Image 1: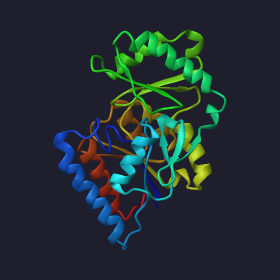
Image 2 (image 1 turned 135 degrees about the vertical axis):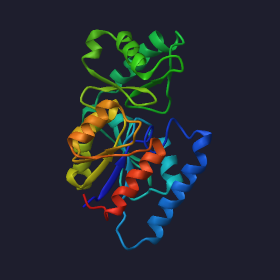
Image 3 (image 1 turned 90 degrees about the vertical axis):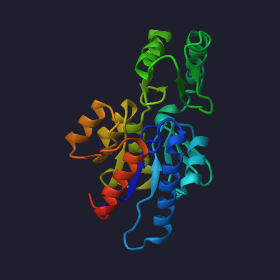
Length: 257
């Protein structure tokens, strides 16, 4: 039985932000989720939480829009923190303790070697990770640029990945997969009772750890392969429509896995 629905945001619940052509669809989808949560008592609705590279304030706002405040944390900053939207409580990944100076040094070097050269911009509002976004390079290209911008000794202490929207740099040992293990310890929800939805490279660690997995049609080839290997569900639609297709697929099965 699925007891928790954990989904990435960019490329799953949304494409990059909420494009104008998706606003009406997203509003209808969020209203349907709200109505289902409030009125459908025939099948218990599993809580919806996020597992994202986005920061806590973004997740706080989206949780209010969707009314997905179930008293459970989301995973933010690509596994750096657990975040409870209701009271804004934040708990860091165990590997982050006493690593503030290293994160600051990573940010300083990327500001000097990448941002000041007008290659990319740092996404603000993050404390335990550094994320960059570019309009001139793909995320795969930007990942290589970021790797080249950091000294080898620092690269050995970091984990660099990317979503469909940005490149994320975290401390070594910090990723969505390792945070999922910490998540189960904090909430008591077993991994085998979680449905995890992802679409890009930074979702692979958590898709490897999860048992029930799914993805939208815009997912990378690597993600689709991971989903197929676990007999997961691949939606025919992309992004928001794909997430909604996955939601209805498992809802139609009474949230049985």
